Length: 294
Image 1 (cartoon, rainbow, N blue to C red):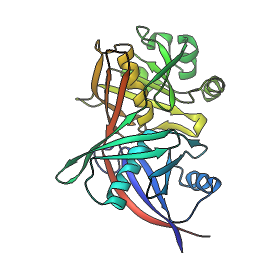
Image 2: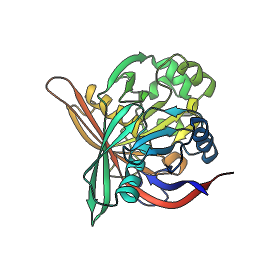
Image 3: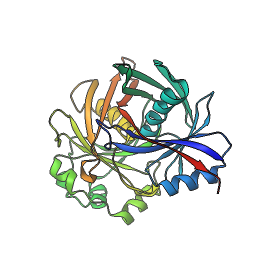
Image 4: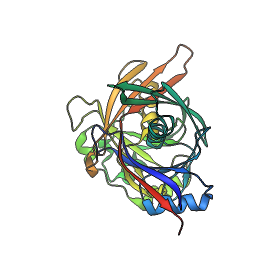
C-alpha cells in the first residue's frame, strides 16, 4: 500500500520544465527523520518537502544531505500543492509551519489559477563581513571583479547566505567555486551558501542576475533560491544598491545550468529601520506519483 503521494512541481518558473524542481510528499503514515532524509537523497533535487500534518500544514524540508529550517522554493512549491490538492479553492493566504516558525504565503490568481505566489520572510539579520581577497580566491575571480562599492556580507532572513556583489555578467559566468576553500570558510560561519549577483542580465527586462553555490549542503549550484534572494533583497535595501529604501525587482537565476528561473523581490525599510522582505514566483505542476513500502 502507498504511504505517501508526491507531487513534482517547477518553482520560480515562467513555464514548465524551467525553474527549480521540487518533490512534495503528503504522508498518510508517520515517516521518521531518517526515512525522509533517505528519500530526499534518492530524489536528489536541491530540496524535497514533506507535509507531515494536513490540518496544521506542518512542513519538513530536506536537501540530499541535511534538513533545513527554512528554504524559499520549497515553501512556495509546498503552498501551491496544499492549495491545489488539499484545500482545492482559491484562498488568499496560507500559513506554513516550518521548523523556523510560521511563514505566511500570499496567492495571486489569473483566470482562476495561481499566478505569482508570494512568501513573507523573517526580518533580516546582518552579520559578519568578508574580505575581497578571501572570497575572490574561493570563486576563482579577480579582486577587481568584485564591486567594492558594496560589502561582502552574511545576511539571513531565515537561512543565512554570504552575499557577494560583482560588477559584470562576464564575472558572474566565470565564477567557479574552489570547493575545498569554500568548505573551509563555511565551517566557521553561520552561512553555508554563497550568493553572487550583478546588475547585468541574460534576458532583457530583468534587473539582476544571480548564482548560488551550496556545496556544503550537497548542492553545487542551485537553479532558483528563494531564501537566498530574500537575503539579497534585504541587502539591496540595507546598502541602498538602487539608491532608495525600497525595491521591486525581477531576478534571473539558473541560466548557467540551463534551468532559467525568475524570482520577484520586494523589500522596504520602515521609518524605524525594520526591513520587510517578500519573495514571489510562479509554480507549475509537472507530475504526480506514489511511494510504496519496500
